[in-house]
Length: 270
Image (cartoon, rainbow, N blue to C red; front, side):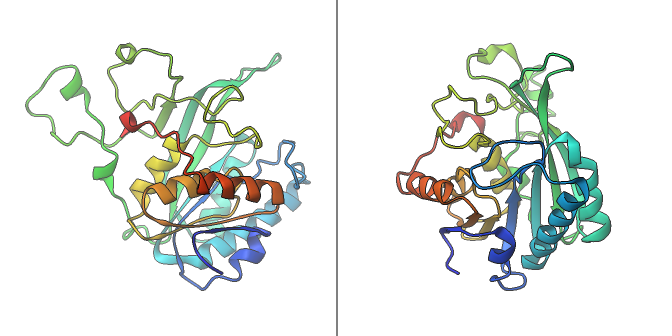
């Protein structure tokens, strides 16, 4: 299996072709099991079957990660608690942070509050030794922005564990906290939207994660390549990527996206 490739393959079968400890960082945005219409996958499995499937691919993620590796998982409300317990109690990973990614343009609901967030779990193999390049994602503190306090750390501070993604049309002077990412989720009318995948991650989210949890030339795996955003950002940041997806269409289009160098990263964010 060659790196810097996307493969039309089941992720469990694909990961089984990798050596133990071969991967530095895994980012996974799997199906949430809530009925989305994917090209080649039925996103509505029975509860126990879905958890059994997650247990199987989690096990492979743990095996292919190196001793200081990191696993970021994006998941919705319905299975967030179960998958955190699965990763920590059964698979043996350690949870460093439970990040809430808040975005505008949530799917409108009529009989409940509009859902406008996703959970981002930051798991590591070794809770004491793991890549954490905090200097790459530091943001100005309130001491710097509001009070101009000379005692403030000139390098800024780490962002909070709530990442607030807001649409580009909100003026910069509406907030004094630069840890708020000026992005929303990728909606159908946005120019970043590739148009052939209904669950596309915003590139700035991946850039923050990849900068924080990996170094140049290291190996980053996305078991659910989808629209190819992880690979696109990995390539831009000088890392090696590998991705799997069961959809021939997604792999074909994501590969074209990589060859075209498609990227809508907003350099203001970092």
